[in-house]
Image (cartoon, rainbow, N blue to C red):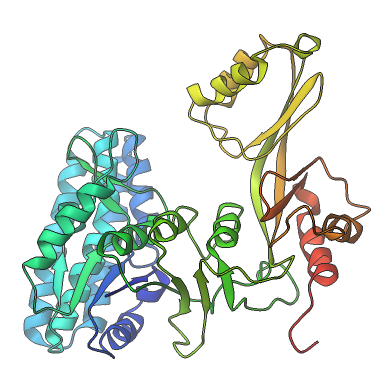
Length: 442
C-alpha cells in the first residue's frame, strides 16, 4: 500500500481536483489518499476565528457567507451530474450550519479548532463525491476515528495503528481510501489538529501505521531544490536525500516539507517521495535511508529568529548553570534552535516569541541579558563529518564580508548553521548558491 498526500494547491480548483482523481486511479494498487483543505480555505477559517475572538460577529458571518459562495461555485465546476450536485449541496449545508452555530455561541479555543477542521472535512467529502460520480469506488476514512494526540500534543501512534487497522479490515476488497490531513482528536476526544502544515505529518503517521511501501507528498513544485527558488537566481532539483538531510532542511525552512513529516517515516524506514501534481512525470525527490557521498546538498533559511545572550561572571565553573537556563525555556515550552557557550556567556536562538518577555524576566536573575531580533538562520546541509576538512572554509569564504552573528558546527554531521541579520538573507543565499554548488551539466 502507498500513502499519497495532496496539498491545498493540488486541490485548489475543480480542474486540479479532477487531475488528482486521475492520478490516484491510474493504478489498482491499494492506496490511502490524504487531502489538505482547498487552498485559501484555512486562511479564511482562521480569519473567522479571529473575528469571533474580537467579537466581530458580523465580520465572521460575512466571511462565512463569502466562503460558502466560493464552495457553491467550486461544486458547480467539480460535479456535472445532478445527483452528485445534490449530494454536494447537502455536504455544504451540513458544514456551514456547523460554522453558523459556532458563530452564534461564545467563542473558545475548542470552537476555533472545530472551525479549522471544516476545511479538510469539506475537501475530502467533495472529492469522494466526485470519485463516486465517476464510478471510481473509494471509501472515506474519517481521520477523527483514528488520528489522536495525547496530553503532550504528541501523536498517539499506537492508537492510530490499532484503529486504522480495524477500519481497513472492514473494507478488505477496497483499494482506494480517502482521509483528512491535519485534523485529529485530542486526549479529551475533542477536535484538535497537528498544527499548520500537518497534512504532511498525517501522511507520514498513516504510512508508518500501515507499513506503507512509500509515502508520496504531492505539491506544486517538482521536488526539493538545492536552494530557495523564490529568491535565488538559479536552483536545481535534488534527486535523492537522506532522512537526516531532509529533516534538517524541513526544520530550517524548506517550505515543501513539514518539519515533523520525516520522523515517523524514518523510524519505519519508509521512503518519502516529493512529486509535482502539475507535472506527474517529473521524477521528484526521493527521501530514504540512503546517504549520498557529497559534502554539501542544499541550503535552507529560517526567518523570524531571535538571538538571546546571557552573560554572567557567576557562570564561571558554576555547576548546573546550563541546566537552569534550559529549564526556563522548558517551562515556557519554547524550543532552542542554536546555542554557543563560552566561559562567561551563552548565546542561543529561538523562533517563537510568544513567551519572550517571561523568559527574559527569569533569565535576568542569572545575569545580563541581551536580545537581538529580526535574524535568519541559514542552514547548509550535506554529509559533513568533521574529517572532511575544507567544507566550513568554503562556506565562510563565500560570504566573507557578511556579518555572522553565530555559527553552529558539530552538533550534527549533516548541517552547518549560520545566524545573520535578515537584511543579508537574499545576498547570503545567492552567494552560497554560486560558490558552494556544482550545477548539473555545468
